[in-house]
Amino acid sequence: MRVTIIGLGLIGGSIAKDLRSTKFATEITGVDINREHAAKALELNIVDKAEELEPAVKKADIVILAIPVDKLLTVLPRVLDLIPEYATVTDMGSTKREIVEIVRNHPHRKNYIPAHPMSGTEDSGPESAIDGLFKGKITIICDQQDSGPQHLALIEKMFHLIGMNIAYMTADEQDLNTAFVSHLPHAAAYALANAVQAKEERNIIFDFASGGFRSTVRLAKSSSTMWHPIFQQNRDYVVESLDVYIKHLEEFRDAIKNSDSEKLLLLIKNANKIRDILDGNNHSLIQNKETNIKFYTK
Amino acid sequence: MRVTIIGLGLIGGSIAKDLRSTKFATEITGVDINREHAAKALELNIVDKAEELEPAVKKADIVILAIPVDKLLTVLPRVLDLIPEYATVTDMGSTKREIVEIVRNHPHRKNYIPAHPMSGTEDSGPESAIDGLFKGKITIICDQQDSGPQHLALIEKMFHLIGMNIAYMTADEQDLNTAFVSHLPHAAAYALANAVQAKEERNIIFDFASGGFRSTVRLAKSSSTMWHPIFQQNRDYVVESLDVYIKHLEEFRDAIKNSDSEKLLLLIKNANKIRDILDGNNHSLIQNKETNIKFYTK
Image 1 (cartoon, chains in turn green, blue):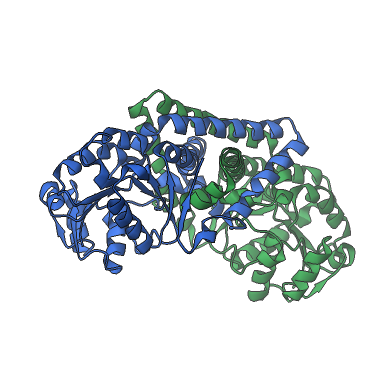
Image 2 (cartoon, one colour):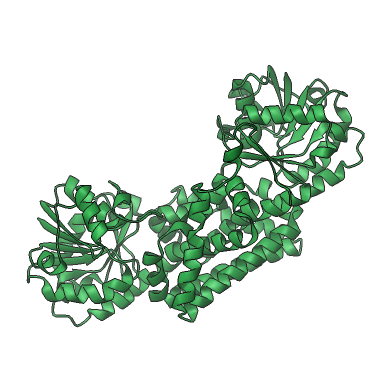
C-alpha cells in the first residue's frame, strides 16, 4: 500500500518505521516543509522518497498527517481536496474538536478518520523516531460514525498492526480526557521547570537533580512547536484542568501550612492510589484482548 | 568495619548492599522496629544479623540512621547517648534543620555527620533495596565545622566509595535547596495524582496513561511514612516552593486563558531550558573529578 506521511518528526518518523516493518506499507513517501527533516528522513531510510505535498497526496492510498495541530487546520482541508476518491486520510493530533469542525462539511469528510495515538517522547525530529513507539499504547478514534466504514476499517487495521488498542469517543470527550491525562501533565512540568529555574542556580539544579526531579520535569523538554498550539486549541479544557490542579496544590500546601497532619496524610494516601491504577490492578482494555477494542460510553 | 544500620528500607537496605560489595563493612548489623522488615533483610542477606537498637549501637564503628525524619528526632539523640566514644554516626534524612537543632548541645555532637544522599525510588521496604542506588548521585553534608574531622573524613570516604559526590552547605541551605528540587516535585506529583483521580474514571486514567503521564506522577507512589514528616519538618520552605510553583502555574494558565500566544510561547521556551541543565551542558561537579568535592558558598 502506498502511504504518504506529512510531517517527518518523532511521530511521523516512528509510524513510518512501524508501517514498513509490518509490511503494511509497500512504499512510503514523506512530505515535510522542513527541508532538513525531509533530507534526514531519506538519509535514515525512514521514507522511500521525499516529495512536495500535492504529488505525494495524489498518488496515495493512505495519507497520515503528523504535524502540529495548528498546521492541521490548513493542511487537512487541502489534503482532502487533493486525494483520490478511494484514499483514506488520518491524523495524529492531540486535539480534535477544532480539527473535525473545520472539515465537517468537506465533500471528502468520510475519507477522514480523526485519530490520536497516545504515545511519544520529549524528543522531536526524524532522528528521534523509534521502532515500536506505539506498541501496547492506546489510540483514540473520534466520531467514527462520521467516517466511511471502509476507511475506518483500514485505519483500525493499521493501528492494530502496530500494536495499539483503540478507544472510541466523541471529539469533545477526547479533548476533555486528553486535557487531564496529557495536556495537564505537560503544563505542570513546564511550570515546574520555570519555578525551579526562577529560584535555583543552574549548577544547583544540575547537581541535585535526582531521578525524581528528572522524571517530574521530563515533559518540560517537549517541543514548543507541538505543544504551543495544543494548549491554544484545547484552551477551555486545559484551563479547567489547570484550575483543578491548582486547587489540589493549594489544598496540599494549606495542609502543610496549617500543620494539619491528618489532612496531609489523607492527601498523600489518596495520591498513592495512583500506583494501583498505573500498575494495572485494574479492569480495562486488558480484558478485551480478543478485539483490542473498547467503547467508552459516557 | 562494624556497621550498624537503623532502618532497613529502600535507603538502609541499598546502602548496606553497597557497603558490603565495596568491603567498607566487614559486619553489618540491622535494626528495624518492623519485625517483617528485619526478617526480610536477613533473608535477603542484606544484613548479617538483626538486633535490638542498644546492643547494635554499642558495638558499632559506624551507625547509619535510615529512618523517617520524624523518627530521627527521638532515635538520633538516643543513638548518640549509647555510642562508644570512637564511633561515628550519620543519617540519610531529607531535612536537616530540626535534626541538627535537637542534638546541637549533645556531648557526642562531634561524632555525628548530618547527611542527605539525594537518591531513591518511589518504592520502599528491604525488597526494594538495589545495588548502586547512590552511584553518581550527590550527597549533602551539613554544618561540617560542627563535626569532628576524623568522623567527617570517615563519612566522606564512605560516600566516595559508593560513588557519590559531596556538596557542603548549612542545614538551612540544604532545607531550602531540597525543598525546590526534591520536596516540591513530590508535592506536585501528589497533587497531580489527586487532581486527575478527582476528575477521571480509573479505567480512563489507566488506558490513557502514556509514558508522559506516568513519569510526571511517578513520585505520587512514594511512601507516606517517609514523606508526610518531611513536608511537616520543612514546612516553611516547602510552602514557599509551592507558592512559587502555583504562581508559575497561574501565569501559564492565564497565558492560555487570555490567548496570549506570545507569552505562552515564552513560558514554554524558558521551560525548555531545563533540557540543557539536565542533559549536562553545564559546569559543575563534573569539573571536580579529582576530588569529587565541591563547596557551595552562598
